[in-house]
Amino acid sequence: MPAATRRTALAAGLSLLTGVACAASTPSLEALASRHRLVFGAAIEPGDVEADPDFARLVRSQCGLIVAENALKWMALRPSPDRFDFDAADRVAAIARVQGARLHGHCLVWHEAMPDWLRRDLRPDNAERLLIEHIETVVRRYAGTAVSWDVVNEAVERNDGRPDGLRVSPWLRALGPAYLETAFRAAHAADPAARLVLNDYGLEYDDETWMVEKRGTMLDLLRGLVRRRVPIHALGVQGHLIGHRAPAYGRGLTEFLRAVAGLGLEIHVSELDVDDQKVAGTAAVRDRIVAEHYARFLETMLHDPAVSRVVTWGLSDRYTSKTFLSPRADGAPVRPLPFDADLAPKPAARALAGVIAGRRA
Ligand code: 9MR
Image (cartoon, rainbow, N blue to C red; front, side, top):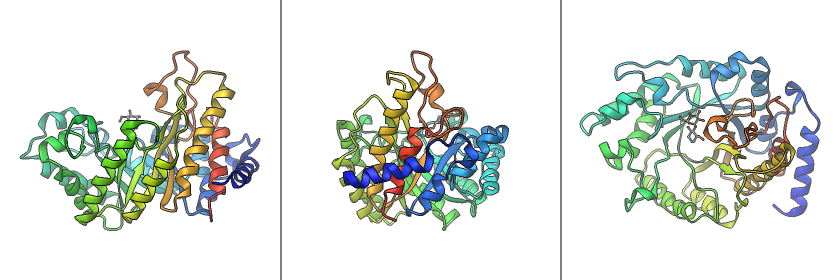
């Protein structure tokens, strides 16, 4: 974005969100996003929304899309091989319906959040049946509510040493690389209207060699899937940004996005937050640095017309998994999200609004 446009955009963001302390009256990121060819959403846990009416109001006012942070993972859904427990997932779906938001399903295949029995029992002779049965059951149940699914999450891990760069996950061990295609085809058969996503991290930074290499591996993987006419519609770029690094979201990222779009795929920013675990300074100083990452990353991402969605991984610092996944050594609460623990907009919310407002409508 040219500097002048950027200044105007940031000014727009400021006027949208400055000094608004009350969550309910905070102008809506979703309303703004929808005027700029975007959907805005956040990942939530149902218990947080149900137990906290102020937070529920904030989610309702800001989000056009809700993602189940954990409720649709195998760990939550599959207490045993022959049982599904839809309690938490149904509650997230109900929240989305009541709030008039779309639901995005996260995630049908992942090497983490697998129940112990699945890790133990997954074998070449039962894996395909288990995978297809799970995907059919879950995707059918939420058809009409879930507009999209992360079908496979985090499939690339070059350190695992395979020539194709695929992660040697329990699913790959049991089924070989075909598990990806099997999963996408099963999801498509279960709900032909759902948009199907391959979601991953470590694609964001131009100055990190393994990420630059991972972009190449990801492109090869996507090209192969598209060539084989696998029903895949989007790449999710997670966007777990690192506050103590330089915001190196530059030309390499731009070119990667263009190449993905060239395959006919949409791109989602799917899990945006900024880790301030190792950022020094007062809360105000950290908030400025965190906001700068939101702005710089989204300027590059939203410049590409194929980017159709921005989802933050949580919405308020009151509820963020960074609290336990990435705590600070000084014991101060982490501040990775657009709204603070009092649900007031932070500089990051203004940065988000500013960059969205600066996007061509
Ligand atoms: O935020 C999620 C956390 O509550 C869970 O304990 C964890 C394991 O299931 O997963 C976290 O979400 C992850 C997401 O599912 C995939 N990308 C990385 C996210 C963590 O930052």
